[in-house]
Amino acid sequence: MNIHIGVGLDDMKFGMSEENIVDIYGKPDKIYLTEDENTRYVYNELLLELSFEKENNNLLGWIEVHNPNALLKGQQLIHLTKEKVLSFLSTFINEEPEIDDYGSFLSITYNDIWLELQFSFDRLRNINFGDIFDK
Figure 1 (cartoon, rainbow, N blue to C red):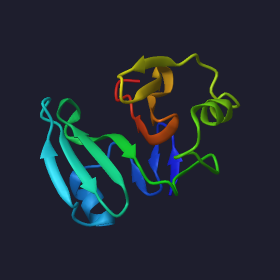
Figure 2: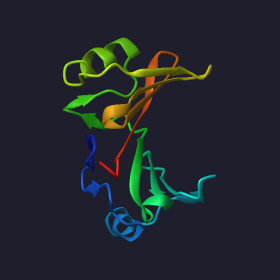
Figure 3: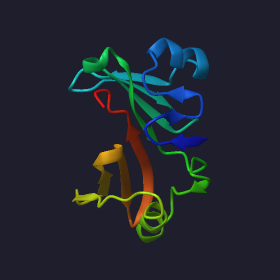
Figure 4: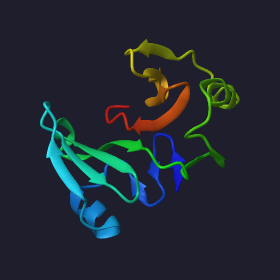
């Protein structure tokens, strides 16, 4: 499972429809609507959550990866310490991240490339990334 920031995940590409995703990955284990009326697909075995955004014609616009086998530039990051993850990212991301402390978890966001990392107990729990449709 390879993460391609701004592009997608393996055969899953930003801008795909719900039907495209179901054709490739099968029916999700759970489907729900967010407060913003975005449709969310949850794939338990893949440890993925996908968001199809209403304001962008219900196309895939956000991927949340909880799978520890996921690779970013060939590196497994989930479960690594914040220091190790940020050190690795600094080798190819030239942006100062925004850091938000929510008490139970820390969110580190690179707004220019639409990448969010969530840490609990100083360990990376999930990698969230998206497409900026109006770029």
